[in-house]
Structures are given as structure tokens and as C-alpha cells.
Length: 340
Image 1 (cartoon, rainbow, N blue to C red):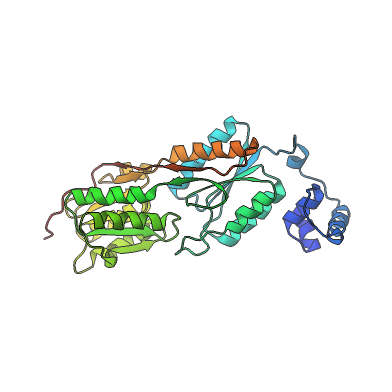
Image 2 (cartoon, rainbow, N blue to C red; image 1 turned 180 degrees about the vertical axis):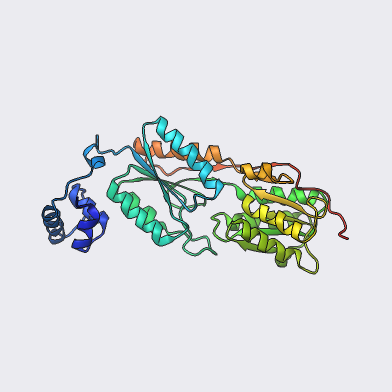
């Protein structure tokens, strides 16, 4: 059976353009292009799919989740909440894993437009892992096709969003380590983290307010995986004057820090204190259990669904919800001790 993709390929246009023509969307398309698409659709004996046939009042009752990683517990926990809340409201969910790839994200967006989803909850991909710029074109493309959009993970303009105050989270974590007596505090940030700049600012601000100078040699970054945390921590712990504490941008990297400390013959928290971001199951079961900056993942998922429902009910005002973090003290932090 012919699909919208077959028509788009033969006509030399995007799937979004085919979708607009077939579904009669009021959008500026050349009449020549429109007629070519309709002719090809007839030649290929195209029939709208079951989802399109079941549209009631112009709605498909499907919502897509676009996330950068299905292996990162931060996203999987949020997705679980969102899927549950959407099911309660009678919506089906598509899960799209972009793998932090801008081109893959764009292909998903074209597909979702063709499928006529009602809305998208979205953690956009960085254009470049080392900066904070995301591909806003995809958000604009979805909205121009009448698809409601809610973003989370960074601060954006012109879209409803949920933003976590990671500035204060990093500030509080650093201040806590300082209160234990640490002055050499390493920071392992995430290369692809949307809140990278705010976390780093919080870390530096806490040092400055406590009269501790910022040392750029104590700051590094990785791709939010365990092996990145290990490599970054090993590098920091190999310095001539290494840190006595390390703050990592997520729990996977913090667990990598624990392994690096063991391989260096260091005891945690005896010789090194470690704090992670998030509060996954892993942070509770590793030895020692991790002190963490807990992010309100359940609240993020619930807020995302609420913002999306507001849009689907006709509220086009862009809303921003800021959620706060809190520190959860476990076994991975202590007072600094001399290393033998």
C-alpha cells in the first residue's frame, strides 16, 4: 500500500507538503505542486491511514515525545509520567529517540507532521554539543502545522516550557561541599546538557561567595555517560593538586567518578566526596550511595501534560514553569582528609 512517503519521494517534496495537500490544510503551496501531488496520489492508489480515517473533530488523539536518549534515566522517568498522564486523558503516545542527532530529530518532525499528531512534548537537540543552541526550526515547523508544542530541558523563546533551576542546584551542591570544608571542588559538566551554562554559573557563584577562587583546571565536561564520568574524574584526580570533592552533571557520570576513585586507591567519602544530579535508582544502590541534587522529574512530566492540554483546549499563551531542585544527603560526602 502506498504511503505519504512514497508520494513525497516521487513528487520531490517533503512529507509535510504532501500532508497539507491531502488533508486540505490552508497553506501557501503552488497550484502546480498541489496538482502534481494529487495526481501522484491517485496513480499510487493512496488511501489515508487508519489514524487519519479515525480523526474526530480534526484530532488524532496522539501525542509524541521527542527525547535525546532512552538510556538516560532522567528522560525515561519523565516519559513514564507523561505516558501515564496522557493515557488517563485518552491519548496515545509515540516515543521518538533522537539520539542527540539534529538530522534524526528533523526526520521525526516530518514524520509526526505527516501522522497529524495533536501535540509534541520535546527536549530539543543541541545544534552543537558544546553550546546551548538548539534547532528551533523544528519547533517552528510543528507549530506552523497546527501542532501544540511543549519543551523541557532548557530555556527557550516563543514556546511553552518547563525549566529546572539547575543554577541553584549547582550552587547548593557546591555550598554544601564548602560547608564540609572542601576548597578544591571539581566540576564535571555535560557537553550536551541544555542547562550547562546555568549549572556552571551556580558552581562558580558559590565558590566566589565563599571566597574560594575559581580554578578552570578543576572544570571539565563529558557526554553524560558513565565512561565520561570515569575519564573526566581520572583526569581531575591525576592533577598535581587534585580536588577533594567532585560534582557531576548527572548520576551516570557520578558513578563513573566512584569507579575512578577506586582505581586511584581513594576511599569515598574518606578521601573524595562525590555529588551527582538527578535521583535515579542507581544513586541509591551504588556503594556508597550517592548524595544528589534531586530534580523534580514527576513534576516535570505532569507540568508538561498540563501545558499541552491547555494549548489543545485553545490557550495559545506561552507559559513557563520553573521547578526547583533539592539536595538529598546520602553516604558519598564527608569532610576532606589528608591523602596518604
